[in-house]
Amino acid sequence: DAKTTQPPSMDCAEGRAANLPCNHSTISGNEYVYWYRQIHSQGPQYIIHGLKNNETNEMASLIITEDRKSSTLILPHATLRDTAVYYCIVKGSGNTGKLIFGQGTTLQVKP
Amino acid sequence: DTAVSQTPKYLVTQMGNDKSIKCEQNLGHDTMYWYKQDSKKFLKIMFSYNNKELIINETVPNRFSPKSPDKAHLNLHINSLELGDSAVYFCASSQDLAGGSDTQYFGPGTRLTVL
Image 1: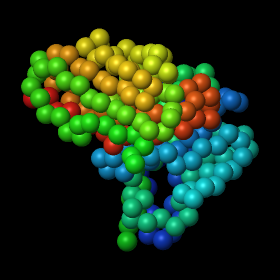
Image 2 (image 1 turned 90 degrees about the vertical axis):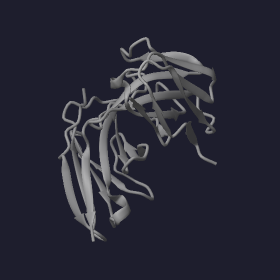
Image 3 (image 1 turned 60 degrees about the vertical axis):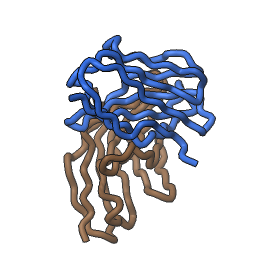
Image 4 (image 1 turned 180 degrees about the vertical axis):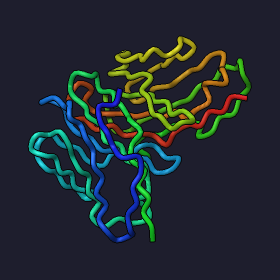
């Protein structure tokens, strides 16, 4: 049911920026793009979300294309602790609040 | 001061038994959820409650019965446990059920193993 497409895995060197892409070509006008991550054996952790504009917080930046059909999550200085599965989720007001998780991208940060 | 907590963290039991998992959130949120993560790591919504009222029931067998005594607690009771119930169960909470801009906070998970 996932409405997003992500690469199954990516590598990143420690200290470098990690850029995780997500395609959501069927996104509707009132749907948000959410990013969560799951570090091994832990509960999913919220990272960031956005509607149209680019967003930045203490964890990451979210770049959404003008047509909103794709987005990129940027971890500016990846550390080993950022190794996790990253989920891009499209969520609107009409789906009763549930998050639909896809397979996500497994990010491996290497020393 | 854990935001969303679950007990127990691990649960090992025999087929046919009945067990419960408890969840509590201290965030003052109105909505709570149960998700199941199976051995293939897929995370799927099971239930959600808003102010103690069931909102989502995602075709979960009726052996699973959520109970919300108050809006800070959502417990999951499972009857007649089966091998296929083995999974990690995550509780989550959020402030706004219907809004598109809504962040869910997850608990640490309960790993259920049915022998």
